[in-house]
Length: 159
Image (cartoon, rainbow, N blue to C red; front, side, top):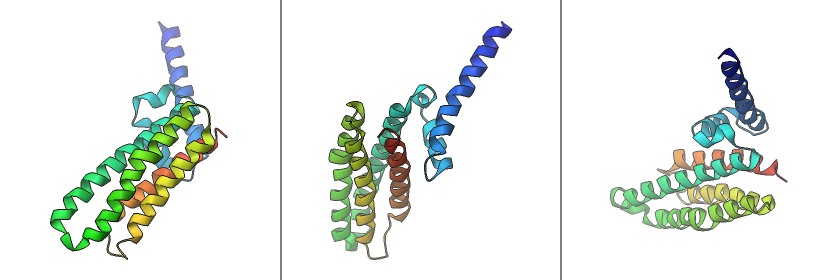
């Protein structure tokens, strides 16, 4: 019985180490660890798997941001033009960038995965700029930029 507990403990330590080792090579260790530990797949994933988990986090955040944008149309009609631009940009993240990144990582072509992940951050930044300093989406935009940056660092480990 003690042997089983010891083996399980060692497995848990080595699994945590993979996340820690990976996240130490990203620009935001705490964010990386938090994102990967929040997904049950993280404990057994290799670097490609960790990248795919992070890409899923980009997808979730983009979906959340689009929901927020849709709600703002009624609350802030004076922002319609900027909201339209943001809606297009976040749809690009969901319909082009995320699928491109998933396919590239899954097929072992991480360079194209990096492009998709990097573009998600660029799209979020462009959305923010469209408000000319009065964005109601700043928090979500910064989150997307941060997650994209962490994800890009993990994807680059596959190059």
